[in-house]
Structures are given as C-alpha cells and as structure tokens.
Image 1: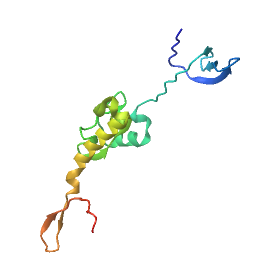
Image 2 (image 1 turned 90 degrees about the vertical axis):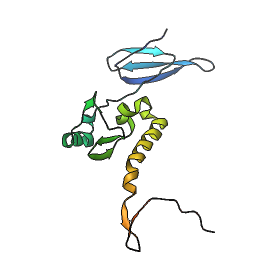
Image 3 (image 1 turned 120 degrees about the vertical axis):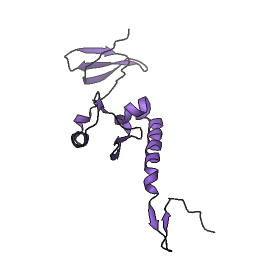
Length: 146
C-alpha cells in the first residue's frame, strides 16, 4: 500500500529497526497531529516561489515594475529584468524563460549563454589606441609565450 500525504510537515521521525538482519520502519508524526508507520519515506521539499517574499526582488519590483505570473518574473529573453534594466536573473526565478531546466546544470548553461550574448556588445567598448585613433577592445586569451 502506498500512502501519499500532501500539505503536511513532518514534526518527528524515528527509525525502528526490525529484529534480525536489516529492515525496519519509520514512525512519522505530522503537524496535523496524525502519525503513521512507513517502510520507505520520500520527502518532496519545496518553497514558495514569489518575488515579493525576497526583499531584494520586492524592492526592485517596486522600482522597476514588470509583469509577474504566479510570483515569477516575466523576464526578457536575455534574462534581464527589463529592457532598460541590465540586471540578469538565473536559477529558479528564470523558470518562465528557461523552463524546468532553470533549476539544473542544463538551465545554468542555457541561462549563462543568453546572458553572455547580451553582455558581449558591452565588452567591445571603444578606446583610444596609442596612435590616438579609436579602436575596438575585445577580450582575448593570450597565448603562452615561448
């Protein structure tokens, strides 16, 4: 028999070894006053994904309002907060753009590629060369000298 309990919190759990080799069960008490004995326990943890619960994002949302859906920000495709606000967001709060992968390494990679592409033009800022001409600066890795 499989029991699925939703919207409860575990208050205490105790392992009860069985006599002999291996085996046993868990005695689990819940915040609603109930308790049960289980052979296996699979805990699904989660949190409330809501910008308004994170002080930094709540302040930003008040200063630079954007649309939200279910507490998640509607970011730009490059993961910036807004077209005129170059703050980029990754991880759980980028789920609307990155999908389910936002929370794993694939999402981290996809997000970093989007952000890097949006920042690349800012790395090519003009500067004066020694001859006084305007040149374009790009970041390159120096080859090791021999």
